[in-house]
Structures are given as C-alpha cells and as structure tokens.
Image (cartoon, rainbow, N blue to C red; front, side, top):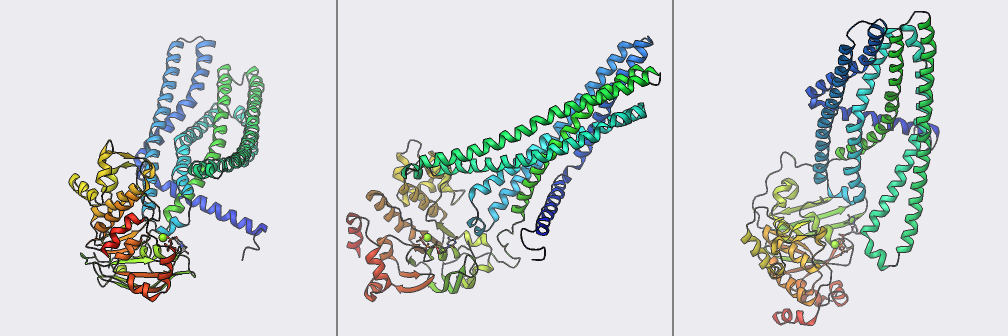
Length: 608
Ligand code: TTP
Ligand code: MG
C-alpha cells in the first residue's frame, strides 16, 4: 500500500482524510437537497436577520430609557416601554416563524430521502440483501434519518438564530463603545477554548455511548426474534448475563458522558461571571470618568449575558452535526449502490409466451470463483412439469432463481420461447412467472390482500375461485372474518400448511405461464397434506412448472426429474426410468422421499 503499512500513522491519517472527504461530500450533497426550497430559504434568511436585529435592539432601548427618560427625566418612558415590548414581540414572532419554516422544509427533505431510500431498497439486486443483516438496514432507514431529523429540527434553527444573534450583538456593542466592547470580547477566546476542550472529550464519550447502546439494541432485537430458541435451548440465563454485561457497559459510558457534560455548564457560568465582572469593572471606571453613560453600561451588561447561549449552542450543534453527517454518509452509501442492472434501452417486452425454457451451458456463482451451478443444459417444453431434486445445498433454489432473473447466469444463456431473458424487460418477464418460495412470506394485512398480491385488481369472485382451486376456501371461510382476517407479522396467526395454501392461491390468481415452486420441507398434518397435494395438482395444471420437490407425489407426477448434485445435473428421466437406472435418484429416493403417510399416498399410487 502506498500510504504505508496498515496501522502506521501515515495510513491512519489517510483513513481520516478519506473520512473527512466523505463527510464534506455528504455535507455538500445534503445541502443540495435543500436547493428546491430556495424561495422558502430566502424567507427564512429574512426572518433570521430580523430576529437578530430585535435581539440586539432590546438592550440598546433599555440603555436609552435609563439615560434619557430616567436619569435626564425626559418624558416618554411609557413609549419606550411599549417600543421594548414591541421589539420583543417581533423577536418572538420571528423565532416562531423560523422554527416553522425550518420544520416545514426539513421534514420535506427528510420524507423525500426516506422515499428514495425505500425505492432504492426495492430496486437493489437480491445479492445486496444476501450480504447484509436486516437489522443494519432497518437502522439505516430509521435511525440515520432520525439523526438528520434532530439536526434539522432543533440544530439548524438554533444555529442560525444564534449565529446571527451573536453577530448582531457584537456589532451593536462595537457601535456603542469600542474600548468596552473589546474588553468584553476578551472572554470569548477563553470560552471557545473551554468549549473545544469539553467538546472533544464529550464527543469521545458520546461515541462510546452510541456504540454500547447499539450492542444493547442488537441484543434486545435478537432476543425478541429468537425467543423460542432461547427458551427451547435453556439459554435464557446465559442471554440475561450477556445482556447484563452490555447493559452495564452502556450505563458506565453514559455516566462518564454525564460527568463530562456536567462540568461544562458550571465552567461556562464561571466565565459568564468573569465577563460581567470585566464589564462592571472597566465600564464602571469609564462611567465614573464620564466616558460612558449608566444606560450604556446597563446595555453592555445585558449584551454580555447574551454572548454565552449562542456559543454553548454552537458546541452542542457541532456534536449533533457530526453524528448527523455520519448518518448522511451511510444513507448516501445505500443510495449510491448500483441498482439491479437496468433494462437496457434495447430490451424488448416479452410477448405472451407458451413457456418453453432452455438452459444452455449455464454456470453461476454468488461469489466470483466459487461456482454454485456449472454447465447446466436443460430443456423444458411448454406445459411440462420438471421436478428438481438433490441434496441440500445442491443448487436447486439457485437454478430456479435464474428463471425470473433474480440473478443473471454468469456463463451460458437462458432462453424462454427462444428469447434470451437478458434481452427482455424484467417487468414483462416476471409478469408471466410466479414463484412460490420455500418459505413464503405473508405480509401483515388481510388474507384477501395477501392473495391479491399476485394480481392487484382481482375481484372478490376471482379471490374465491383462487382460494377454492387450492382448497383454501374452506378454512378461510371458517375464520371469523373470512378473507378480511388480518394476519400478524409473517402470517403468524396461521398454521404452516395454511400459509402455504395462501401462497399457492397467490400464484393461482396471478395465472402465470411459468410456475416455479420451491416446496417447503415442513411437515404438516395429514389432512392439510392431502389438501396441499390436491392444490398442487391444480397449481401445476396447464403451465410450465419447475418444482423443487420434496413430496413423492409431486416427483412421481413430473414429466421429467432432474437430479442436481454440487451444481451439476447428474441424472435426468422419469421416475420409472431413474429407479430402473438405480443411480443417484434411486439412492435419494430410498433415503429421502418417503410418503408423508400411507393414507395420503394410497390414492396417488392407485392412480399410478
Ligand atoms: P441453494 O441453491 O440454496 O441450495 P438448495 O436449494 O439445493 O438447498 P436446499 O435443499 O437446502 O434448499 O444453494 C446452493 C449453494 O449456494 C449452497 O452451497 C449455498 C450457496 N449460496 C450462496 O452462496 N449464496 C446464497 O445467497 C444462496 C441462496 C446460496
Ligand atoms: Mg432451496
């Protein structure tokens, strides 16, 4: 490496350089998000300036009231008071308008970001999700956007207000009396140094609290998801003690962070007192020598008090901005991922197909160099049912995933009705294929919505027909709310067999030319098994079907059985042919494919 060995100062400097570059790039991009709201931002700027003027104007009016109306005895004290009241009212109003405007603009920017993230997640290739824990992605979508939210909704308004307010005050002081202003400013560098000192320590401490709270959250999340395993394997005590350790680390980190921040405010107050003393001392001296009026002295005292809040705010916003920028960086990292390779301009719409599938010399690797599929040559005629069998990890799911282009073949070609799938739009391809996954996912929503997932505009009659075709109608009707029964997350309120039937109905209603079915290995009761078998018959009828089969009945009925082993086709033929050949299939058959129960298999055998 050019930057020196890893861990050397040079390489570390490079890393932090890189990070700083990313941060400032994120900051720039974040700024451009606000560009569409230009006119509102101009209005905001106007409110901020007006607010700053009122902030600087108050003490000045107080000074004049003391000098002219109180000491000299000019009439008009009441007018002064009303002016003062007016100016503070305007200030309050401006501050409210600022907050409103910032809130309005920043919430728009945030919801737009969230929407882009969501869209991006929908478009990312499946390979992206294979490599990332769900929790991490969720945290990016929720927490990172939230840190931005905090910065925008609290930080930015305060920052703008403070910055301009402070400038206004400094200018007013210089205009009123230069020497006293300069003396008052003496505390500013001291205060900046103190703030920087605390901010550095607080940043480190807060980083620690964020890391430890991350561990705690991850633990809680795993615990909830894996609560059944934890109880089944008697891991509850171990888990509690692990949680205790992490929780304690988080507590200690927070205590030390509080220790640091708690010293900050008193130090600043001490400095504030010092500044007041300076003004009283030097200002009092000037007043005694008739170089400064009592009113101006009072105005200065009020100004000095206002120094501190903005500077304190600036330091806290700095910390907030750091974590928000880190969040923005992670958000942009997702947005910058290349989405699923776009359909090229030359992609055509796949015409209505008959459903002939042809793999020629197909090879595939999830990770370059380790082929999961090699030299797959396979022709499936329209309307045929092909059963894929093979031991676990042989590549069955992978092979089937290539048909709807969840992944693209690394070598060779895959044609449907003689058209290479890479030459057609994904949408037109997928609209003619239904995929029943090994572990189908049911969304939280009603049973009807879940079936309609396959065809959004399906009518109630179509819904019932689909359910009835896969023998699901009976149990759905038996539910208190029928099709409107709302499912828990993942369909938790249904049995596994029932969930499978729903996923079949979803495929039936989509009425695809090609059906891919990754049979679940789950054991279901005899009655449901019988229902599922009959449902399968309906499902496979009249379309090209690729079934990753675990059921003897499905396999026996297939027109062709393809045996996969370590990503290669090792045997093919009908059930009878392969049994007669007494090869790999016959062995698998003896070991693996047993009929669920004789009662169910009997009719199938009788038919055969
Ligand atoms: P699969 O195609 O998932 O194997 P399978 O469907 O035949 O197995 P099962 O009967 O258990 O469902 O996986 C084939 C190989 O590919 C396996 O070695 C794991 C590997 N693989 C990846 O590397 N990344 C992935 O995302 C997947 C799904 C599989
Ligand atoms: Mg599989």
